[in-house]
Length: 290
Picture 1 (cartoon, rainbow, N blue to C red):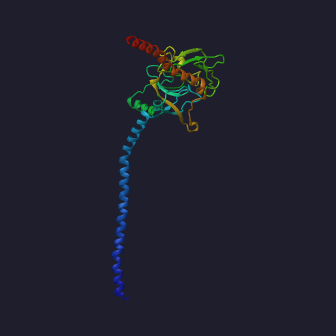
Picture 2 (cartoon, rainbow, N blue to C red):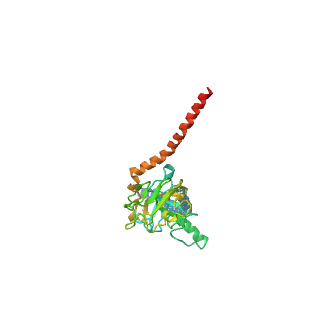
């Protein structure tokens, strides 16, 4: 190869090297610009994402599941102060409220709060309190959590010869959830639960301001079913106490189930009994016309 050929080859390679260099520079520049655009786009979209997340959370809270903060000792040891529970707001659309359910309900215009809170001093504080209540960070001022002992038509009484509360004459063994050292009730009472209402009690009976302490209120201490927000079904905070909240086995007694069945059959039986004489009268009337 002559010196001219070498010079020619070197010359012919230079543009290729220059081209490669230019391409590499353009590629790096494009990558950097793309990252900048992505960063800018993320920060622009972040407020929208936050708003959408809040809206979705509020929709879920309003219609499906809501977190609640436990501010008092009235449900110890099932629930402790500062526990957070999730409440199912749909369950009672597919089934009736059952004895043994732990329910959250509103006491607006009825019961006084077990824990008193100062009203927010300004709208901003009020807004943040509302948000905190909605997400279970702070307690609601008029929300209660109790265990359902009696449903409509039940007779709840204290106490039998062994000191047990009875429902329709069936004694409840409450050792599994009653606060250690507490008795089912200190003062005797007997209450017939009106239609559309519930008899509720705390598990820590000695400190719970439940149906027993509201017998002078409308409904004789019972609460309206339409004020029930939902069923507390799981503890989610603290993590060390995370667990499902079951219905105690004492409420699954066959005698109680039989009482429910009898109560449901009673209207049908009464209707049938009333229909028999009407049918007989109608037949006699038709025969007389013939």
